[in-house]
Length: 88
Image 1 (tube, rainbow, N blue to C red):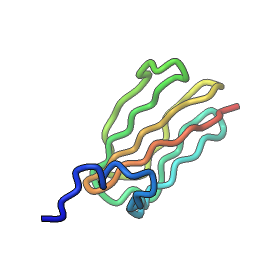
Image 2 (tube, rainbow, N blue to C red; image 1 turned 30 degrees about the vertical axis):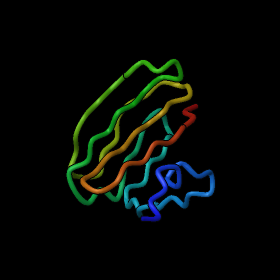
Image 3 (cartoon, helix red, strand yellow; image 1 turned 120 degrees about the horizontal axis):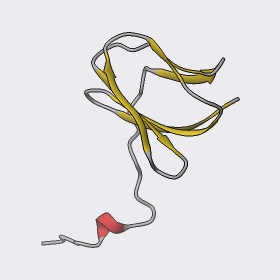
């Protein structure tokens, strides 16, 4: 029948990226999330993996953060984005 169960495990598999409209930046001791178009869930982790803050927003927002390196996950209805930010 031509079915190959290992074809999906190929190292040459092409990933599909979705466009993520929200912009995430860190400056002035704040985390700024802009261009939010729908209900969005934000999680901020320390570099050791500790969840420092989790919240939901439907509009542009900013939160206070201390200096450091942060992992930020932003998830909306159809897409998810994880980035590393440095705040100083």
